[in-house]
Image 1 (cartoon, rainbow, N blue to C red):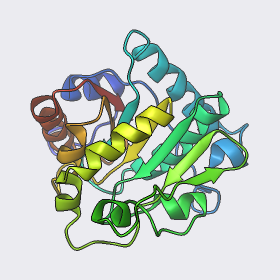
Image 2: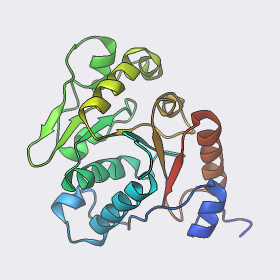
Image 3: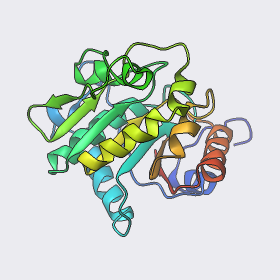
Length: 234
C-alpha cells in the first residue's frame, strides 16, 4: 500500500478526488479495431457501461441546465477520447442533439475514432482560416462532430482567444449537449483554459494505472481553478 499508489477501488478514488464515481467502463481488448462500441457492439458490457454513465450524468445534472461537458484526465493515455466519442454517441442514441468537439489539438484522436478527416476543423476556425463551422453530420443520429483541424503551433493561445468562447456559445445554442475532448490536465494548460468556460467537467482515471497523487493534483486543480462541478469516472 505504501509503494503501490495506483487507484483500485471506488472508496479510495472518491476520497482522493472529492467527487462521486459515476461509472465504470470495462477494458475492451477490441477497442483499437472497433472503438465505437455503442454502435458496433451495442450488447457488450462496454456499451452498457457507457449507457449507465449517460444515465448517471443525466441524474447528476437533472436540476441544472448544463449544456457543455469537458472530458479530461490527469495524464494522457487514460481513455478520455474513447470515452468522449462513445458518450456522445450514447447521448445521441437517446435522442439528444449532440456536438462533439476535439479541442485536443496536440494529440487529436476524435477524427480517427469516428472515421473523419481531421481538417478543416477547430484550429482553422479559431485562426480565421475558415469562417463557417466545419461540422460533420452523423447520418444515423442527431450528432455533429467538430474535429481538431491541422496541428497549430500555439494551441493554448488559440483557445485563449475570444473566438473560442464565441464558438462554444454558438454550439451550445444549436445542441442540447456539447462534449469537448481536450488534453490531460497535468502536462499542459489547455484543459484549464477550456474548463473555465465549460459547465461540467468529467474527470477520467484508469483503474490500476492512474496514481493517487496524479488524481489528487488533477482534482485539486479542477476545483480550485475551474470553479465548476467535477464529475469523476473510473
